[in-house]
Length: 304
Image (cartoon, rainbow, N blue to C red; front, side):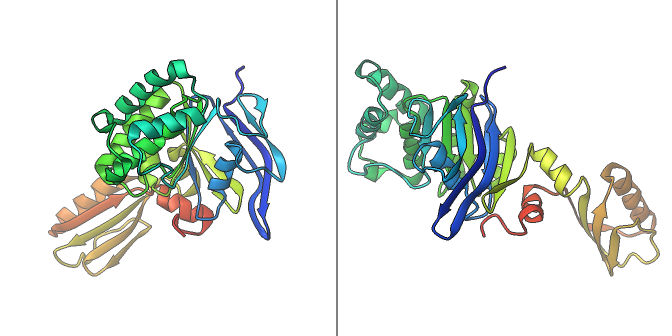
């Protein structure tokens, strides 16, 4: 059986009186795309810094592809920080060259890596322009490329889409999906729930330095808040004597509440409304998502 890409056991880290990691356990399968969620201060960045070898744990262990790791391991790990870590007065090509040398890319492979990175990011036409002239989305793409230019099998992404527009976000996810298709293991920390709902294989929720939930997005929703749906409807006039299922509450011409079985309850409800001679003015049926899961698990909004 192949070793996992990453295994963290009982990891602890304190910064003075603050506990950043509190006996954290986590495991990531090779080739997996794991989303790392948690409120501000939950320990997400500390996890990444520890895996990258930039922070030393007070206790616990980290194994990368089956080997104990206590020091930076640039051949195995690529780290993309939240803050843009580029030289603005240098061109994209010059930045990539500098980071390639920092990551130990051999001279004989340098040119092919530069060509790959510039094509991968869509920046080939602007390769010799100074980064200071780039848009935020272009800087983000180049920032990611500088962190993975040496093609490590494990990549840590700390808020890789922060501050970019939807088009730039889509381009970044196209880039990341290509890495995953090629077998790269991705660990992706974010505040943007829409970034992980449809891309990540599993999600790990961290709070107060501990892992409090792990699973696919569907599993977390099912286990945390259930499979019901929320209904909100408005009618042209009060419903009067229409028979309502348990969990639905009427206030004049507005109806709100939960549906345990949408496919069964909603048609019956709408049929009763039609038979009563009322007309539906607005109707919204929504299943709970990761935002509700997050609040249920942590008691806080993701951005708190």
